[in-house]
Image (cartoon, rainbow, N blue to C red; front, side, top):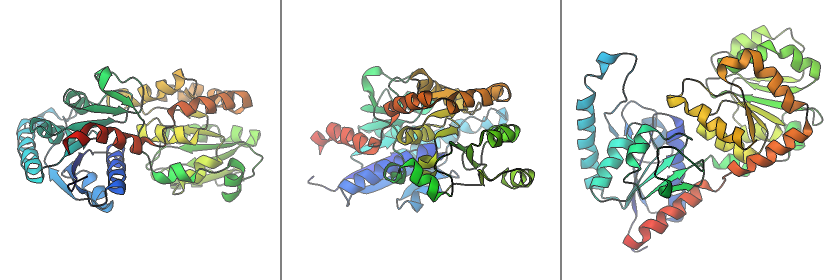
Length: 369
């Protein structure tokens, strides 16, 4: 490449939008270390903290979504949109990028819209099985749309590239043999082990399900790695202190996620986009309980893609009380079922997502460099 590369990235609001953008930037920087990067984020959102922590510069714009809980608070939204469009245009003209990548979230709308108006090639990375509103609008101008599922409603079919979600490198490289991982976690290598993960704050639905069925776990002599999250951890430790919990590890947070994935024979999880992409790489049978209040119920749509391939089972949040244990036990009690689900999960394993996304970007833009 004859000139120094300049790249705009925008995405935020949640880790599911931020970390794929950082992973794409990391891959570009690995190939071209002198690349100049600039992120555009929403002021007051977590990207303004996470992106600098990853070593990248970020500019903030004043943008927010519609507040459905307080209609009056939306009166200033048109002004915010116009202001954010104006600032995005100023930032992009001043920076003069070779291309821009958007990973969803409020800020990526104005940033990529203005980039496309200025004739800069734009690319979209959508993490979920259902297109987000921002990405749906931007896809009309995008050179390509990178997805984690083969079909995503709302995108032009000819622009979709099913390459997966970029995930943490340690998940890709750190997976190890199950028996070895169990021993490292202080578990018996001969006992069936269930990992339950509900995100950093935890899932009260999953926590209540385990509290209801702790006796069954003990009676079946299963091992349980139970990540409770921050909100319920102390209460759960107190409530279970008199149980026969030799086979149960109650953890507020799991730092070494690849070790926990490796130790599990079965995983119980919510159905967030990045979680599912990590589960694909782990290739373990999964019971998914989608978070019902995710935007446009996208977690249920994510989960259904796996269910349709017999890579996972799903229980709706509202049906956990009636169906959780029986559905889980169908997986636990059959080695054949577990083996089939693991094999089918390989379809969703995309460990080279960041590399392949960057390959596709450079295929498109190299002629202009």
